Image (cartoon, rainbow over all chains, first blue to last red; front, side, top):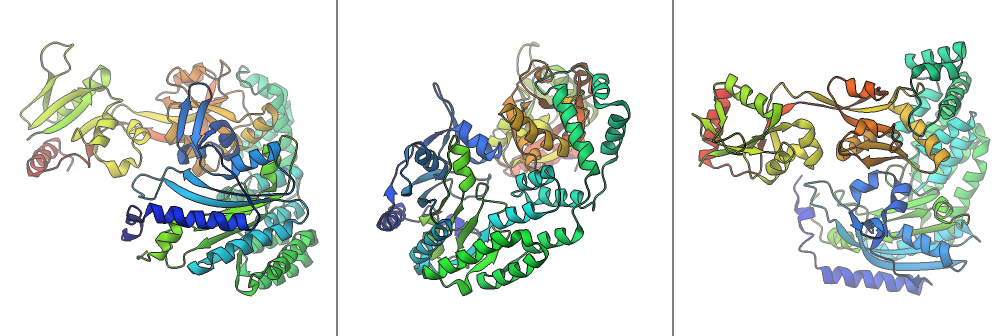
Length: 379
Length: 230
């Protein structure tokens, strides 16, 4: 693969990218959004708690003598949500434009600072309508660029997990790893008994049942660190209960696998999902929502018949989204990141809201990717 | 022009490096007194630089030395995309140590990374912060845990006496270098069954980014022929 595509970054005119960003920001304002600014330096703790230790490898970390570890803004969503949860109106629409910073792998020659222009809707009245509003707005603004849209629905996957006939603990484990497909598959294999219990686990359970967890723990060594003997005993109880839990029935696991691999245009995908509801009636509310979103998109002027749906879209890259997700990609430039991404993140408002929450959906456009896609070049 | 070879400036690593080259007919010695960080190589077109073992990865990455002897753990930890910056000339067969993840022995319910991940989730729910793993090998540990799909942990920096951090209440688990496991056992820690992150040994590296003209290439060819690793 030649690298003409990524080499042109430096040549791409920064001023014209900024002008395009300003044009998009104005369009977002015209759609009813209030422009907001956020700090470039963000407290690292919030971002680390949200994204985990991986963000440290992807963001620029620096140190402030008073405030401790700080990060150069790796995204806008977190500070915009924080700002809204602290003192936002209800409902509210925000627009913003500015640099974000992401470290790139050595030798990747991808830009590590770039402009994002974003639009976020906080509205509890009509979530499906808000999904459609954001997607339709992005579609309209990006129409001249010849991009390919793709949509997904993490909410559908969460609903599918919820309908499984299994323990609450197993559902929680699956929900937690929905964004890590490899581990998710390993969990499914374990919960359907496709992989056997490890010998170490089996002998632990046998010993714990035989002599009691407490004596097992006491014999193993001194209690050191914050994790107490009671916590260890509680986990052993969980493991014993889990070993006794019946496997997830094979037909349910098959439906889940079918959903995860579903790729079709929106109306066709909806038909498939309706069929799956016969075997998994618990899916009905999520599929109703899916259908209502298609109607709302059509009403907002989106040609839904040609919009692709990929159920697993966003699973490995978009960690805080928990509902509708979308991306816009340059078909001739698979080497470029998506020119726009977005989705619904209700749970994030709960995590950052200190007891409050509000349904929220939004997205960002990267004007520099639009410019590079327009320059063509070979992948 | 000669090639510059960086070797550890003190201790057993230096002695063993000198012995390794001596076994291959290349005689290295400190010039002047024991305290002087200068050295010479008899009979080869090589300029010897005595450096701290920890600085050799940086000097290799910058191309300021052509060759360097240091632990493979330090190279992989400190040089981003290390295999693009340096090339392994020869593993040297000493300085063996394993970078491992270890947890308290009393954690009878934790044998694998799977268990560690589940415990990290429960720990966070119970204590309100992410499970702490003390280490100085941030990059290697983070990459390893990401590949394994472990979440809800945090790395806390520990530059020494890492095995003691759990007993002191500063971490729940550790990731550190061990050769015999003795110190781990003495501190009531146990290695996870699948907790081996990297098997380190002293290694002779070549810096890809150093100046490699005809003279340097010829000197390297001669050296490689003499140590017999070509």
